[in-house]
Length: 203
Image (cartoon, rainbow, N blue to C red; front, side, top):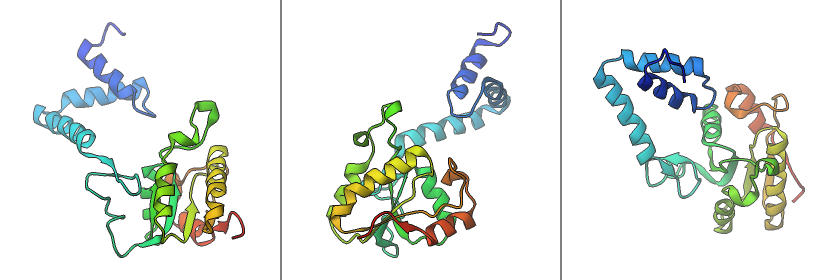
């Protein structure tokens, strides 16, 4: 711990540095910004953090983040509930919704299969997906995991699970470089990836 920083400032910076993509230089800049603000603004910021942690939970249907009983997408009768788009994280739902073209619903896995990191299928939200499908009325599952080794492995694993169920299982036709992510793709690329999706097996 650097001796020339006030202890509360250093502790605040260390908390910021725990966030993904935040190094200590940026963390200290954020900490200085916080202490330069009026106390009421800092209180509002702290309240927003606590409220988000307290009030946001997983949608019981799609596993996306929501503060409602059902997320707005699952609760929307105008969406096509027979088509489920499977994604890695809530950020991917946001990215696909930016296209304004997809009218189906989603399922969030909250991760990808990665044995080297100890992430096995039972640690993902796959059971919840299978439960949704077993309720009937689902005709297509779109695998929209990222075009990485882990994303491809997860898509193929799920496709093998779903093949006996007689569903159409497709994969996004990525216009992305290998290793790219949905989160940073532009809307046109994502729309074309959805529009030109390809089957993972012959039904």
